[in-house]
Image (cartoon, rainbow, N blue to C red; front, side, top):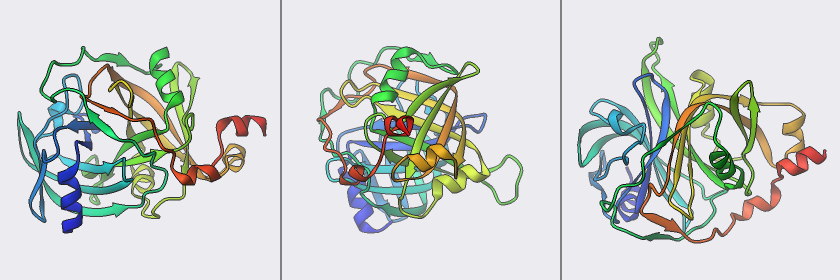
Length: 291
């Protein structure tokens, strides 16, 4: 990792994590700690002194040998760096990652928010997780319908084929409030979101082309609640809805399989968002419906 990336990780109060469960399904998670809870003793190593909270699907699976994707994002400055690697050590306090890839991402579509720690990360545990999916509850659907941000985890299969997984990844997606559409199909909730012009690295889309599973994470920035889902994903490269959605290069459809809502899961709260300037050139599902 470049020193600039190492320094950013050390400043952060939270970190996005992407990894797989025992069924090789991707999940996105978030871990929290005071600035400095992430450290880099050398350019090839990142140490995270935190674990996912109780009820998080990834908790039992962040173990030595597991591929993992990390996203360090400083919302207030719109800086973000991604890192993919392999966990080399893990215990009840945290985990250590050997860096495989480290790369910066642009600031596009990030809504600026100031974080505030409202209690110590080790303070009273959040209420028990509530199971979600394949059809989401009204509360979970409402959170998604008003969101302007989510995070998506994907996996890259090994070159030798079969079920082996080479790596995991997690990335950010942003848009106007309501940019994720929520519909129901055959008893399953389906989420559809525009995919705007990005870094042209196509990590997420490339992974989905080879392994069409994903995990998505929605954060309630006002209450600290977290909604984590896993399911099947597909990329739509054409069609009338895509043509009608200003700024969209593709559409991403996510079919919910299962997940969990964890109320008050995070000891952080964030300020009201300052919208990313790129959003002015993007459309909405209301525009699509009006034709």
